[in-house]
Length: 149
Image 1 (tube, rainbow, N blue to C red):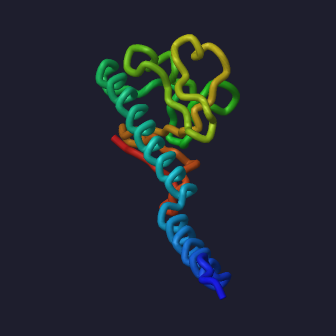
Image 2: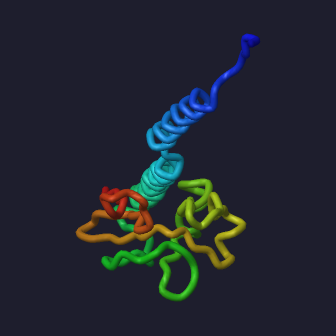
């Protein structure tokens, strides 16, 4: 009989099984969906801070008064019924454009879009002279992302 070269079926199945286990471990460790959610929450933290900084600078220039539309009730920033429109107060003097929640898709509401209907997905309120901006659509298990100053 001749000497046969090659792999047996068992050897091939063992190698495929090992590769499948390694792939499963890699996907669990990397978890792309979780990484995307973490990146979106990082963007929300940045956006909330940018809006808060812009409103803070507005208040510095206006004797500590926030934009007149801001109330004690957390209300979404945007234009339209039931929304607080701060765009004309802060864009472009204090911020180039109002950032939008990553779930809404658009990056910013700039000066040309202030007059049109817009929605940021972020909320703002003022209490005892302290302004709070929050991101209610956060993915994190901790709940709402917010900043107060």
